[in-house]
Length: 216
Image (cartoon, rainbow, N blue to C red; front, top):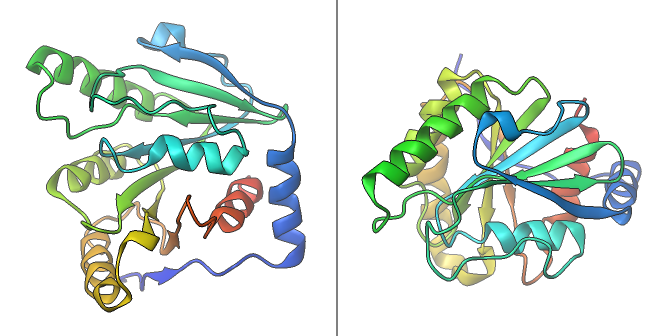
């Protein structure tokens, strides 16, 4: 049975408040990890964020946490090859995966990152959901589909978050959104609700907070 992909609705008052309270607590950078042996204990729920370089991942994490410089964007795509862990209150980890799709990274670096990513996705029991960030100006690219395929194989549920919605003219949005929905239909691990966000305008931030706070 094929899923019908829709846009995540704004949260109800109770869900919105639960999300607000979660991210109103202490949020701190814990550590950067370059090998599975360096992972923190899987003693709390975690969600991870994946996306192409320059998709706005660091900006989104900063918007979620209300901390402008918590996650730092690199000026050079693909430079940061660590899995970065952030603590949220005493109950959650936010996990920032390295940006993918970097054309200038040496092949050994890419292969090392891919190996670490596969190990992380298949071997992290506390991972509840992956959020795959898609730039609203470009839609799903081949490299995005490859990551989604890896999530399918790892049996990790993932949810697409569209970033930079404010950068797309209203007349062009429908075409991009239909392309994304069509791409997602090929992936059994895809969650059927797409989150629309603009970190600059604050759009979708309360929705995403509520989704994370509501995961069990």
